[in-house]
Picture 1: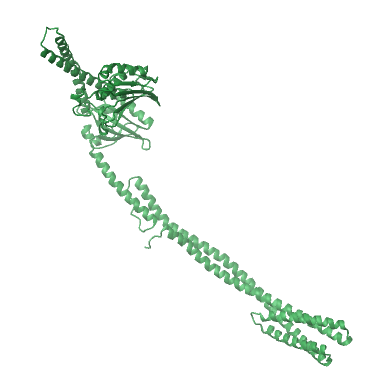
Picture 2: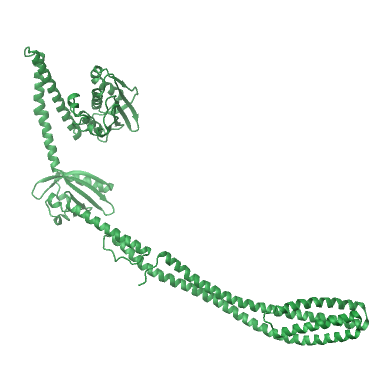
Length: 603
């Protein structure tokens, strides 16, 4: 089987074959036109020759008549006419000889006529010379001979004219035939050229149509995830595209196998729901997570698995994501076949094209249990540990104040240190309880409008004494900016940031506090001249228990919860907090509060 042509080769074939035929057609047409032109040229030459012969004979007859009148009358006027006629006949004779010499056909009669004209010219010259010399006898003889030659020429001319007329008729017939042939060549050649082009186009189109149909079917099969037809042969563009399509299909098949393997072996339940919230597909994880066989789950309603008290919330979330054509996450509880329940985190995406909900269900029962245990620990710490520690702190304070009698100086020092340790432990417990409340969202914020400068002044008052002890200057902006927030908690954030700045700043340094209105809210910043924070530790300082240096807790004091509390409070306000620093050149803490509190947060 012949290899398919490339598109460029097909185009060249479509152009070259008709063009070759067109060249042959034009060559034949030019040959026919050349023959016709030669016939017209022959006809024109004969007409001009016969006209010249007749004109010359008439001129010679007129000159002979003038010569005869001159002989009879000796009138010089007739001699003048003769001389003029003689001169004109010489001109016509020269022109006629030239014309006859150009006869392409070398016609015999014209050849005889040319020789006869030569004799007439010679005899005419003899008569003219005799006339000029006064030899009348020679003149008479010469012009009689001229008249005899003219008579012969007239007879020859008449015969030649008849022959020429016959030849002209023949030429006209040949011309008509030539025109007919040329017309036929034009019509038939055009039809053949058009037919050839049409056949060639149809042939190429039939070949391309089959190949493009195969390519189109393969593209459709690829989109429908069906097997492709056999790969097209050849090295043309269609075959190259089809080969690329097969390569893509092979890659997609491999990717689908990997994807399916990942889905089948995933620990989370991956499934799809139709618009009536019935399971259409699911992976193998349902057997472990939902304690139900995959085939049994298909067609089952999601509502049948959810605890009744969580159904309304679940249906609302799913209806919302279908209406908004987006995605959502929510939690609910499902009841298993063995009667137990599990907490599930659902991540759901709605596909408008397929009219399906694609879901990933993650078992968070363990996390919920940890959260429950954590709350129990916090409750134990807040009630069962904080109360005795507070009582112990009060007792130590009474001892230090001498409320139970005087004690030695050594004992006084130990009691004082113990009191400070108990106070620090109670502070850590309070901070831990607070941060858990903030991060769990179990606190409500009391939003009001404040002058930012008032909040800054309250925070400065809380750390003024410790700053003065290190002779640290605190400078603040005088810009009047209003901010919507929970003032008590923002003062705590500022106090924590100022306390850190004082703690890590050298003596006789400076701390700057700025607040300014920016697009969408208010920006606060606290800048110090301390040791700074390395770039690789700047993100970690907002995590619990994190210290920049290992010995900061013992040397500088603190629990490592202050910045975590700051971040939790700013997050609760819907804001952001960050730090920028260059080691050895201090650091700048900035937090942004939006102009409007988050939806549902306003008190």
